[in-house]
Image (tube, rainbow, N blue to C red; front, side, top):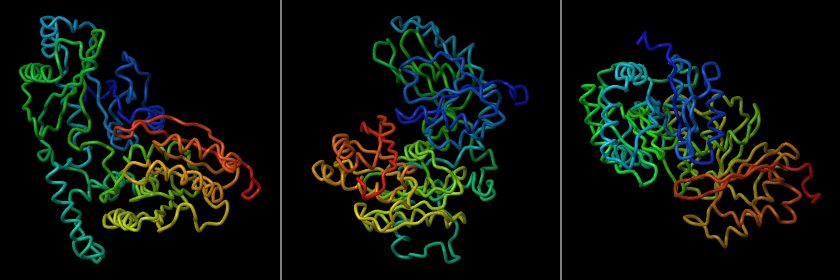
Length: 455
């Protein structure tokens, strides 16, 4: 590894489209001492939903797994600009030559050796997840003090997945667990291919089969299609472009898998929660409140973000009692891991009639009902206006902010433009983001200086 220690490494981190600037800001803050300008060719088709960055060496490689807005991180190991995607003979010849001569297998193996033990615990198959989830559900309803009485404190696989990201920073990582035996994470590779467009004379599957074989012939690496610990990512672009990368989260799976074990009807990815918190620009000591918290995704993400401390309080409420039960159980997982979230509170409340004094909340962050799985478009027309007015009452004049996510843009437009809310709120910023297969919009609102009751 020593001869590769000082070499530059270029990566790209993925995120929901529309959040690239927030992810870039997070990367700049996390790697402030080792980041360099990117020298790769970055075109329209390979930059959407991705942020490219270069580290001057591998000394901070482990920090990749601390990113919150990123879903996956890929190390770019090779790029090529002269493959005629309309000529299959040229395609096969050049791809084989790349596999034989251009990929630095020793370098890749050395970085893998350093990265593999810093990855989070192994991702679970659907069968494993359902089996462990069923066990937790049975304990949850039979024993409300499950794991907190001194018996059975050992966390199962999905509980570890939920809290281990937090433990990497909690108390300087004193409570975190790392894999110490390399034999438990054997070196097994596979190749996956993504393609932009459909005009090329080779598709993703054909490239994975052909080039995967050439890579194995050239490297001698053992492969596994089901349980690889090194996944190589080929990218077929337009305009003769080709790229090879290494998925840095092959073993652990996506970085978005954290905090939540008990899901509601409309789960929000942790990457989006983290981005909304970043957009709110929360300052030390401010109070954050999610009045439609569901199972607690946003409050838990805020309370488990060590760099944001001290938060006075991270509050979540919902009008559906079962959601609050799940919120409580999601927090209990941290308590079972001896990393109790002490700056978090929850309650069963009506978001249009909140039991707070005027001007007590600094920041509101919430995922509003879209009118699809919960509620209807017609109900949203009435709810959004009343809700925004109530938020104006409890939020601090002049400095209060609200970050609101919804796909019902018409209802939001009506609510913001109402006579009362025009006097209470000013829209600072909005952006479209890709939330699953939905095109949703995030609004950043600023509380005006007008006192409640004066508008």
